[in-house]
Image 1 (cartoon, rainbow, N blue to C red):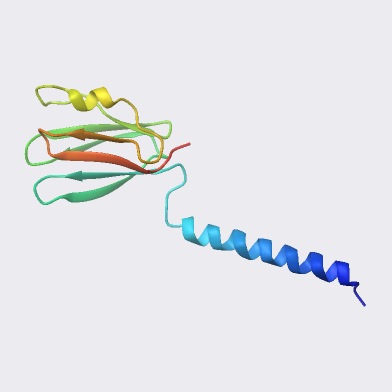
Image 2 (cartoon, helix red, strand yellow):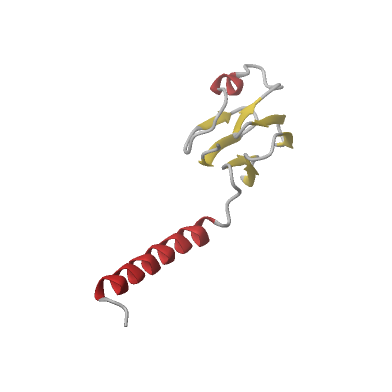
Length: 116
């Protein structure tokens, strides 16, 4: 017959496993390495961009075609066609709640979950 101490340890281990499983299920819909959200255009189109795969993205906002670069878990506006290039000045975004905007293109970019 198991001792009282052994039963307490088993219950404790099961509780920890249940908590870990809950976190896994809650975060399972997000890509590993982070996610950024781009909102653009007059109709506020929303696109999620994973930060775990390097690449270049182009979006026609109806005003300008914006160019985004994902590299090493971070994202930035690059090669901006707008007159002031201020969106490029935000630099690389990687931490949760980092954001940038290109007002002439009517586009905003925010990191929902930080990259690696």
